[in-house]
Length: 515
Image 1 (cartoon, rainbow, N blue to C red):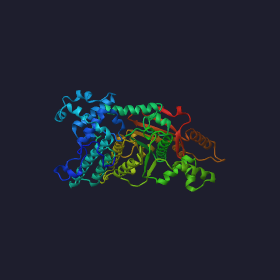
Image 2 (tube, one colour):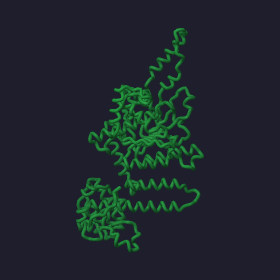
Image 3 (cartoon, rainbow, N blue to C red):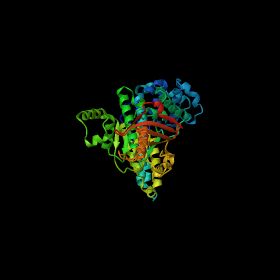
């Protein structure tokens, strides 16, 4: 958000900018802050030189203008410029000949009067900044009024903490300059955003339209992590949910850091600054996992200190390399969904995070009124996470536990019906992933280890088990059971349990299956 400042007058007229000393003593001092003269001067500058818009430090939208006629004029200017047309009072005239609001200002001749005094060109940037700041102040006043009205409501149905959450969300929108962008947008504006995503995917070689997971086969299957998507990553204990989520968080943050080092603008990178909300593990435990993965030293050896001097030096190098990683870990336990959203907004504002990971959904808490029913509480949490993804326009990966129904089936591969406690998780999610490792279940079926005196059958049973274990050891499946953007299916990955790292199979052609 631009800070309000004292602006130098771009014109000789003293009434161009708001004068607080003269208006403070008048009844009109309670009117909404605005400056139609500054708006008119800025529009005149744009009509004289269309390139003024390209040099603005702040992106102005039509909604930032106070005068309705100015709003429509600027909107039409942007539309014509988008068509590569030259915009002048003459080219604008056909669009406003029947405009009633403009008729009150003098009709289409008003368009010519906007350019009569070209001194707006001398301070077009300052005019744009003032128009922008005044729009934010008007939105701030609206937020304040709504906050006061809500606080005055003392009926039993009112939840004070919910009002605080709503007020914080509204203030975040103002701080992000989104005050005037919450109205319905035209299909043309939406299609331009879609074309930008397609262009990014094309430039990446046809694989990534969003943020990278760092796993090529996964990127090929889902097209990357899309902004505003809620991705549910589920699995039974021991499958490696947290490991995969940590890998993806690291890969996205590391890619952003490397791209910036290579001179690629942050907005052009397929990486992302990442916020990791760990409700189960502490920040240092997660850091140990990442250090183990990057140094190649097992997490167990790091925790117990069973490393050599060379290992320690390798660990030190890895630590130095990761020091500037744009990965932010919040390990606050027992967070409510409202508190998580507040913290996520703060991280977005401070560090411009582009990916959020929550480990895991069932450890979040809802509002007080929903805790009497766990199904309702989980529904509230999943809706809150989807709302957060759309509000911040970032992908949100939320880990989830599965019910024990998986263990009762012969085929242990999870299904959507195995999601615990609420069907709303499946409903709110844009993608649902399941992590499945067959070697986990094969290892649990190991028969008695044969001794020299055991019979042939015992030796044969263990030999067959060893063959099965060799066939599946280190292999994992990422099952995409729901995807709004494409087909479902599964991706086969390599899993290294010693350092808790998922990676692509050596033969990529063997790592990708369609349903």
